[in-house]
Amino acid sequence: MAKTEEYKMFQGCTIGNRIPFLEASARKVFDKLGIKTSEAPFACCPDPVGFNSTDHLSWLAMGARNLTIAEDEGKDIISLCNGCFQTLKLVNKELIHDEHEKEKINAILKTIGREFKGTINVKHFVEVLYDIGADKIKENVVKELAGLKVACHTGCHYNRPSEIVQTDDPMKPIKLRGVVKATGAVPVDYEEEMLCCGAGVGNTEEEPAMQILNNKITSAMNAGAEAFIVNCPACFQQFDTNQKKAEKIAGKNFGIPVLYVTELLALAFGEKPDDLGLKFHRVRLSALLEKHGLS
Amino acid sequence: MVVVDYELRKKVMDAHIHDALKYCYQCARCTDVCPVAKVTDQRYNPRPVIMNSFLGLNTFMGEKDNFSLWGCTICDTCDEVCPQKIELTEIFTVLKNMSIARGEGPDYYTTQASTIYDTGKAIPMQPAIERRRKDLGLPVIEPPDADEVKKLLNETKLNKILKK
Ligand code: SF4
Ligand code: SF4
Image: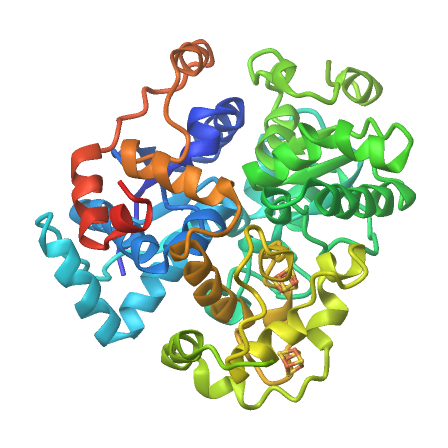
């Protein structure tokens, strides 16, 4: 496996081409913590929910093609998105451990002059932040977020299937919480912490998706959370962009802000809300920022 | 009359986890943890999907957007809790691929696949986002080699599935 001094950045379609402000916070935090990244012309990961459900073979082949781009440079991939992470991690593992499958995919890749070798690793950015350690994060904190109560939501594809992905503890993930705690913020315990954001079924029918979201938000707010902390752009959009729809089903206003974990870190590191593009969030953050002296 | 769908049975039996399926003892742990089963009164329910696919009973196809198949939100929680270590979502993927190849399944899936086939990305870059990236001080995203992606996806026959 490659020992990476510098990662290939895999921001994915959703962050890169739709909500790039999440990437802005990630880059600022990476800079401060000394995490080096560089670009590559990656295609769609592709989506483990949509594209894999459409055609598994095409999903494997495209995932493998992306991996070969990083292999060419001998650099590990850092993913900003659960979906991209899960796809690339699963494809990488499957092809490394299944010689027959690897031969089949390599026969396909040969038509475009590529070959999967299995020489690099794929990392979720939360793993990388956690491995850097709470001390290093604390060194950079200039505005301690003490007293800010948050609901951590790692999302499903961050660590499932856990036997294969092995990012974190399967039923009690600790890494996102660890990173959050280093800022002084307090993760609350809430019953539905492991519940999905509901995005997947929303591609088929909206109502069940919104009911799941409603259960999730209600559980977090009942536990006293003032904000959600997420590490996946699909979850982010579900909590932030779709919160209004869930409010309709619930028949009440939630108004609970959603922060990408790197936005939380960047605020603690003293970055200005404007430089992070926080104005692009649907659920307003101003009251929260004011209350905790961050505006 | 109940008939066995031989194509479905063959596809399921060809899947590398087919051996595990016969150890499903219908305990319904998967149903207990399924967030969609919970909010839909089990209109979607993973347990019978496993049973019927093992038996070759195709109760999932023949209509578009069949909720008993496409209701899954792909959270992979059932995989985590199944006492028999059955990777349920792998079977769901086999079934969904079959459903799409028959021209069924929610439009979302084929629309997304079609965009990926044409551009290499699920969400193509827009000028407004390019400007926003610049304002946020972010680097330009190097576009993928769309021709190469298309060639690859012709090789996997996605073009046939999408009727391109
Ligand atoms: S949890 Fe596993 S063994 Fe139990 S019904 Fe579901 S698939 Fe079968
Ligand atoms: S992966 Fe699908 S079937 Fe399994 S628990 Fe999640 S929604 Fe239910």
